[in-house]
Image (tube, rainbow over all chains, first blue to last red; front, side, top):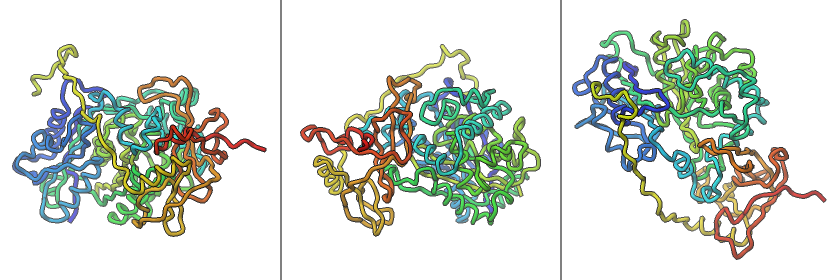
Length: 383
Length: 154
């Protein structure tokens, strides 16, 4: 029995959404997703899952705030503290178990309400490391970027090329508020924020709520032909934040393991041949290249493939045709669902200005972001 | 709700709040205490897990065994580094700071710490050594090491 995405809805994708609370944004996204699926949440949806994290909400035990905005009152509703794609993995298992036919997944981000994001990032570090008071808590990205470049031979120019590709591409995507017409020289001439990363290579933040409705094969086929299949999904965590020093710097084993798990379920042995494009983690420029390598999409070196134009929208294997997080912004725990949403729209032929031709199957990859080393990968298909 | 959305920012209401998280007691646990005691004596600990050495020492090994605490004497090298110029809000630091993962050739991991070196002089493989606070100022924290500095030649 297969599992399908039968509906998607979103509200926001702007640096600020002042008019609504995050809970109202969840409601708006959910109403749109159920309309898109042609389902009534009170009659047709068997369970609801929200992916969120208390500190982003400004509320303790925020999972108990989840039910009403998404239609989950008096139903099995649960929260996972993790990236939205982890919720999709949970929904996938629930439907595969046969006990649930339709499961709605939501994740949201309203970073514009968070007055002290830097302090929250700091607070997520090991208390001992926190005593160092490192002035930018995203420092791990710099350590990984330097180690990645040294290992792979990728240069500053390659990282800047990722930023240019994704920032410019996003101009065609109405959901990409952080897109811009930038040139390689502009990126290379700008000052680093966290060496070697410039402001163009560190994604900004975006407010959004995203809702994804998943269903069993029977339900999906009954609803029409808009569905796309989740062929496989897997996730992994490396050493946790409590032993972050033990991370394999310049690599992302969690991404590699998540990919291997998802590919196994999907029957994918050669992802570069057996899939048509991907939406991958790129909240920092180097992460797109590192993700591609760990996903088995790097060929003889992701930076060389990038240089040849292979990952361009018109290239042999488009990567982040949406503009990625560098264009769309980091949407906290909704980052994975942002990537999935773009893949679903592509496979349905509804991606508008960023629509690719003849795409049937894609890889979706997300990282929970610093200071975590948790990654999630899915294979999604039209056929 | 759609009929009630405000179209002028001045009409949007928000309420300021505060997360009450300022006070908490962290329990270092028996291994944490041993590591802290070692720091007060000017020693940096790692943990031996089978034939692998991990820095810094933690209670559990990646293979879920408990491991054996051992002192790491170096020689210390920069295994990766970054230079921070701005904080997350875009405020420029008075002076860029060098943050590095400092470890040894054979060990996994290392310490994340400051390196007192000009930003254009830092590189992977740079030989460094820890500079401890005076004994009476040590508190059993990683900040008992003030920073690492390049090993002077000769």
